[in-house]
Image (cartoon, rainbow, N blue to C red; front, top):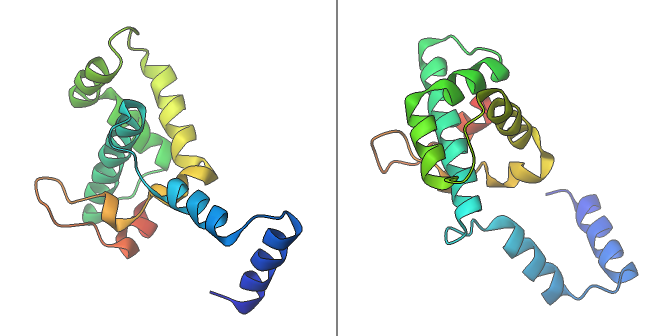
Length: 137
């Protein structure tokens, strides 16, 4: 971390009268995945399916455009079954789900969740290394 960035942060906190405890609480909440919230859980499941597909492409040496990977993930039977599990009251709309997942992956506020601790290789308990996540996300 750069000293200039730390200084900017401290200056901002002082200016906005945000205590260090408040700032820490905000950062901790933003950085945690609330697994008891079904919407958050569904988001992380979609991110996982996406990363697994991207990793498979990466291993083959054939990383496609991200939108193509999103389309392929959403079109799978696994995604459709999981959709029915999480969103029982809505009919599945593939085009809309492609748009939603693509936007979610691209959102700056969601990048904090793309951490090694949140994702494992398919069929294992081994975390996907952060450098791999950065290459494939």
